[in-house]
Length: 153
Image (cartoon, rainbow, N blue to C red; front, side, top):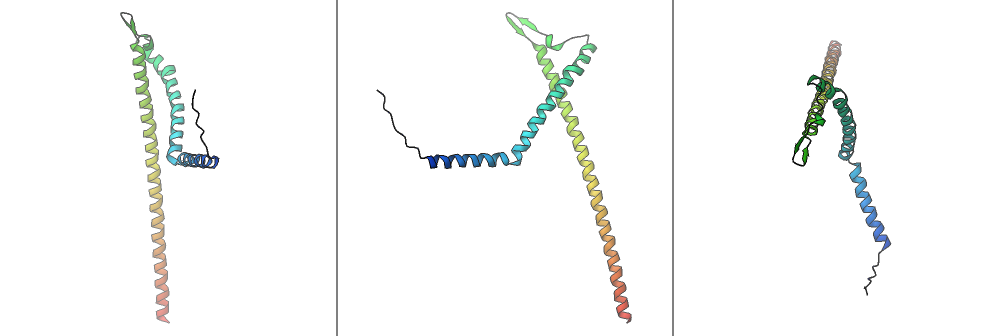
């Protein structure tokens, strides 16, 4: 026969613990880093599909034609009973290199655009500062004229 233990569970205590966990989870999800990471993963997945299509549907057929119609995924070696599909590995390495190259150009483009924007903002700030300096000079001239007029009276 098994012994049964009765466990008293306080409903209020259980609800308070649940609220605490929910509050912690809400705080965690609300952090900007988590949201940025989620957006990055989603965009990265979509970007990966685009690059995979670029590789499989455009680049690899061209490369295959240039090297005599070789399909890398079909390359394999048989050693005893084992079949080593090294062509799939070559395909994955090429996919990785092309993805890395695409990301490099994407990041490089973003950095250039960011640099141009920073230069434009800097130029705009310098123009505003120059205008303010000119205004100060005009104000000083006006004050000097007022001072001179007061001296002459």
